[in-house]
Image 1 (cartoon, rainbow, N blue to C red):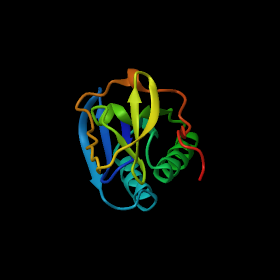
Image 2 (image 1 turned 90 degrees about the horizontal axis):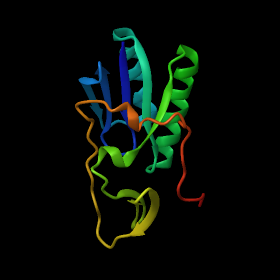
Image 3 (image 1 turned 180 degrees about the vertical axis):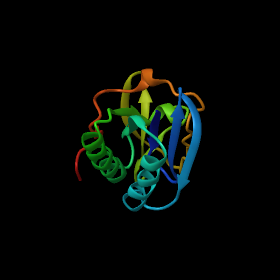
Image 4 (image 1 turned 120 degrees about the vertical axis):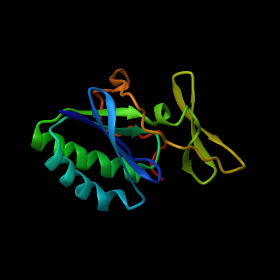
Length: 149
């Protein structure tokens, strides 16, 4: 049995496969999330018995979050696999996360806010070598920080 973690809010899309909380496989792709998730999971489901799914549900690219949620939620229901949400800051060393234009999401204490930066800030998202499920939330629906435009 394996756990799957999807880092879905930046390019490349990263998917980690964990056995006994240890990273055993890493998948990276620059393809569109909507195009590639079905392909990747088709193979993962053939190769592994999945015991849990987790994805970044806040903050970040709303479109990628929504697409990932719908796909994983459907898989969760159909295959009876628990789905968890995780905050993106856990995977980029708490660096600002791109929102739109010059706005970035920042975490101050336990609150996520937006902040304007004059320069472009890039942050790399990294799959952890060891999975810490204490960061998982059963609140797996997307959390939108910025209102609709």
